[in-house]
Length: 285
Image 1 (cartoon, rainbow, N blue to C red):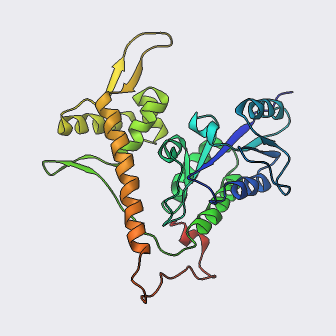
Image 2 (cartoon, rainbow, N blue to C red; image 1 turned 90 degrees about the horizontal axis):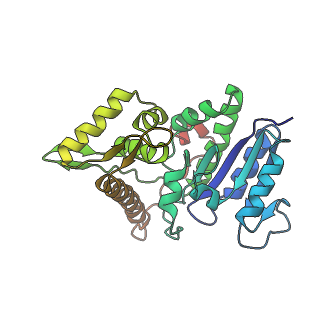
Image 3 (cartoon, one colour; image 1 turned 45 degrees about the vertical axis):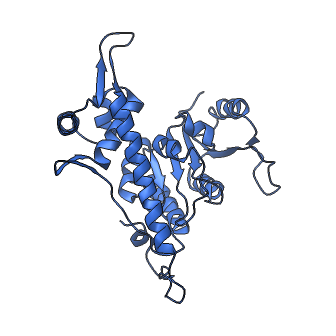
């Protein structure tokens, strides 16, 4: 008898951010879970046997695993790039590092959960509560993410930045609208995008219309008819603004943290979290 299987997909900004460790920790707390990895390198002796060099082999493994497991945890950037998986987790880079993957912005945009210095436990819980039927399991998964966030933040404090676009002194485009447009691009309707960002339809519609008024550009385009009904897509201007906003947001954050890390010689280092500090304080709850 087939069982409803939840597929977790782990992707990341680059090497040495702990993707394998995070996947294995999730397998430890998830009931009836199995782990698999897709990669180009040869599997190491201490890694689990479920290692696949191509997407076809990994997909066959997942199809075969679904009848026997409740959770399949995959480490695969390719699955994340294609938006495959019930819960896609993006592991951010360590502050101060710049050797990121060229597709890091795409992976970040595909993810439902962001684990890194700017990750929020409240955002994690909003996603996990929709996917997991057990509140205790949601808390256990969040604890694993908190633990991993502390690992990524082990270098000390980081700089927090915020980017938004202004027209004639009026706020026109910011992170909230960017998240909404990302979901429009993913789901194909403004109503589903609003639901995914936990907004009601009317405020979401007003947000888009107000931005279009200030910017003087259409951000979304409805398309009536067709198989399965109409769809809403990003306009060329909407896609350009969204991609530009995400790129600038990332570049500003990276620049600020690199400047912060480049302290003049002789000055004190940022304080590391004390061993007794609460994990949830470190996660910003």
